[in-house]
Amino acid sequence: MKDLHNIKIAYIGGGSKQWARVFMNDLALTSDISGSISLYDIDKETAERNRKIGDRINAQKEAVSKWQYSVADTLDESLQNADFVVISILPGTFEEMRSDVHAPEQYGIYQSVGDTAGPGGVLRAMRTVPAYELFARKIKEICPNAWVINFTNPMSICVKTLYDVFPEIKAFGCCHEVFHTQKLLCCVVKEILGLPQPDRTQIYTDVSGVNHFTWFTSARYGSIDLMALLPEFIKRYFTSGYYENGPADQYKTDMFAYANRVKMDMYQRYGALGAAGDRHLVEFMNNTWYLKDPQTVEYWKYRLTTVDFRIAQQKERVEETIALAEGAKPVKVEKSSEEAVELMKAILGLETRVSNVNLPNYGQMPGYPMGAIVETNCVFSNDCVKPVVASPLPDGAKSLVMRALLNIETLYEGIKKRNGDILFQAFVNQPLCSTLTLTDAKKLFNTMVENTASYLPDDLKVKLL
Image (cartoon, rainbow, N blue to C red; front, side, top):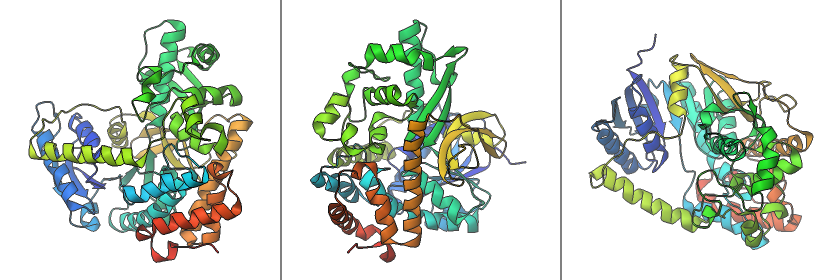
């Protein structure tokens, strides 16, 4: 039996400015497990800062679990004897992401996120997959029995790479987008029924789709069918919008807020509720529907997240990280809404939990290609993650998900084979590229590859003629 107070976690991307601290705080508030965390990052200085923050977390009276933090010099060292491997990396820099997000604007293509779908998602995947090929090989060699938790985007293709390179790997991808829509449904209970607003963990939702393009086909709060309440909720709030975390117009001051008008519109047309944030959902839809231009974006009440904003935000996070590491700012140990630690506890046999994660399709989404990465509910228990078969999507929504899924499969094939023609098929078939001529699509693809070439292996620096 595994010693629950001698758990080793290898954290790849251990210099993370955000996710690492969230994870470290959640671990500190969990009394059932403890052990060591080996932080590995190509920027060793950032990992060292997080080590210092980890030590400061341990010193707080709120910390009920103490973890020994260390910084590994190599990936191999970090993975030695790991029980869990957490991966959270930024593929490339924000300068590469500037090209991902903003180069397509010269051709009338706007992207609200640019990290999963659309032209930006394609290029980000091209940077990411080679790194994940290495991670999978090293995990197979050094800690083949470890459970691997992925947080990196593009989520689907990261998980696809891990399983393709190491088919026996025990890996899954975690995303919190669905949690926000569950919280919206809690607001529906309050607004339509006048009942006290429940916690999202009290809502059971049937989830299916691909990451950042998931859908709810059913949702219940006890005996209450929440989907039956949506028509009245949408009638009441479609024009004004409704945001689960604040006022409907919060998007005007908060780059990541939205008024849920997109998912209300999609529900009225498809009969299922989009379960990611509007900023992600729109990037899987045709170019002129929700992202035609900034005026259209404003009409639907969300924001385009600019790379300049991300750079400024990163600067603030770096400054905060340094202040926390050096003791210039107090450490607050607070529980987040993430579920990674709870899922780890379930895998260690401490509880049973149902949550939505990304896994290969073993049949949990009937009618979709086997082995493709899908996001559904799964049951977590002792050393086991078992997918739950999802209810069928309405035909219209199913066709949209199928297009997204096949684009991911094609994109992965192109990257794996280092084949520019296949890569271009995935690129030009992105819904956000639907208004491009083939000539312009080739020009844009070549420009974007050139802009990110310093983060591509030589055999992926493809150029279309």
